[in-house]
Image 1: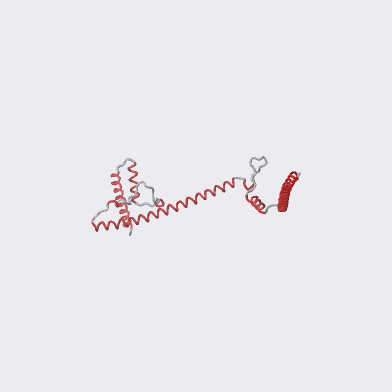
Image 2 (image 1 turned 90 degrees about the vertical axis):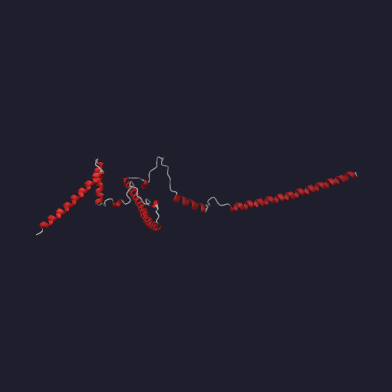
Length: 220
């Protein structure tokens, strides 16, 4: 009996400890549940209403509506071209005029740049001529020769005119060269052309002298 009572006492003490641990855990669980419930209530209070709209979203929507425009599908049966986007002959003619004006402005700017480069080239050419003249003086003093500068400024005969605005300026030399060119083109000889030019010059000079004599004779 003593042994049975002792055993019963030991079992009762162990069961009481387990019951005590279960109560502590239960209280902890109840506390956690209360905390979660309180957090849920705070979140519910912080939740915006269904009619709430973010000011930043409203501002972004307003900006998009003001700038993006209405892009209606052109394949729609109800699509109509807006009045300001319709093309007609007057608008197309205005575009053509604007394009011609732009082309003229581009060409004018290009011509100004070309003329500026031509002026710069003439300036460089003059400087090189002065340097060549100074070099020749030095060669004379040192009694030496510098052969490579003799043809430094030779012009290409087939090069285009550098001053096309002077194409209408001509003198007797240009006329002689043109007559000579025509005679050679017609099968004549260049030497004969020179002789004929000399004859024509003499005839012109004699005609001028005869005209002067006649004027003197007519004077009382």
